[in-house]
Amino acid sequence: MSSEPLTDRHISGAETRQTIVLANADDPRTWLRDGPVCPLLKQHHIGHTGIMRAAPPYEVVRTQQSGTFMLAC
Image (cartoon, rainbow, N blue to C red; front, top):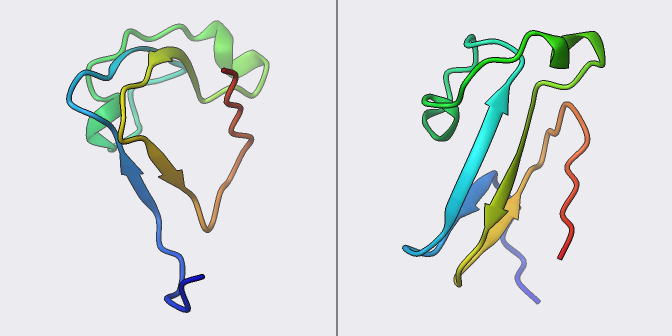
């Protein structure tokens, strides 16, 4: 087990494909940049949602997460 402190990271394999829908276009993260906006998401306190077909390697680490992250396989 590593003794290094955790840091935020998002690693996706080259063949990973995703479709993301945003509540608004204010998020500066590059992986959210091109998603269409659906203002109705904000009514339900959803910042963004989407579907991903992840290819290895795949890793997500969030150390200061501001909301829920759900992963279904």
